[in-house]
Length: 496
Image (cartoon, rainbow, N blue to C red; front, top):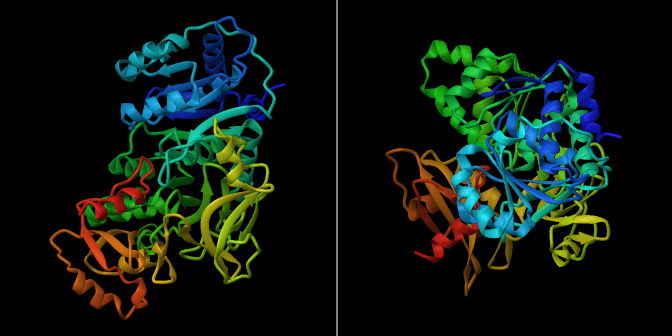
């Protein structure tokens, strides 16, 4: 019996599944190509029996066929990030215990030496698609399917193991909540080593029988062209992408701006996630596109757990309510349930929650309270909707006996006319416990002193929330998903 994702693909047959630089591919051809990949990887073995297969392939048809091929061969997929340096690629390969590495030709010089040094089987994508098609193993849905590595914003990246059943639950929840259909078409612009790109976009599209158009590299001008020229119904991105699209729109001639705005207005849904969406960006995008971006909340470990509604009112700065199948609660430091209006840690339970951290049983055990996964994120429920205050270890700053939210302070600083981007962190201090510090990216030609900022902020923020130190940067340090890496920001202040 097939994994449901593949069984559904058979129903869509000659319908277009993937549009990419390599061409246009149907569901039927995707199944055929993934069978070729699986057969080649198996190499006359009946079942990979959960061997880890690491692969470095740009977004496109070869990526999808390889991912499906690994799953159909009984392996665990370990997608690698095309923008990561060699050291990070080696870490993931070694930590996951990969026994096979697959690479697109452009990455051969990087990964073949790694494979040779570790005596790992190395395969080029060009070798797999001429393989015969053979019978494949029966893979149960309770088997581990994928290892995705956390962004490492608070510690060394951990391998998050999800089963086929977990993935199926994550997909079905979003397909139901966001009403995916086989008539949908989405433009894929996200990295494919991360849950946002793999589950929310690619897998949901293929589950629904929709059409997924994939760009191998994000380019704001190209994205605008595709929004104008394609029959898109959905678009999902991170806040930094929306910021770049806004910048491109602002640089366009007024006639073209009108065309761009009208093209956006035709989409039925535009989503933002993976990082906090500044309200200023949300409002600017709405004025440009007539689209109220849908914010949601999720993690590598849980898929998506919270979402603003598809049809009802969406509240700026909020991430909505629990998605279908997700159980969510807020607890205090003693794990007692908190009342609405009181901040607490988000805990999640349900079939979408991951199986374990790869090779880290103690970290896995520590991450759960009974059957509830402890996210480490702090939120509050207001007007029936969740508002994220930040990560307990990064975004909750303890200063002078107060607990303050870095995200709240950031949202205020972004109101300042001279501030383009900012990141607020707590830096250890013997007197205050932590000092509130802000790294700022200013608009071109602007200047700002700490004294001027504090004078401006005193009418908006409580005095203990106002930054006591600032740094002016050309750009904020970010990971591959565009999320600001707060430990790197904090390090900048300690190195001053």
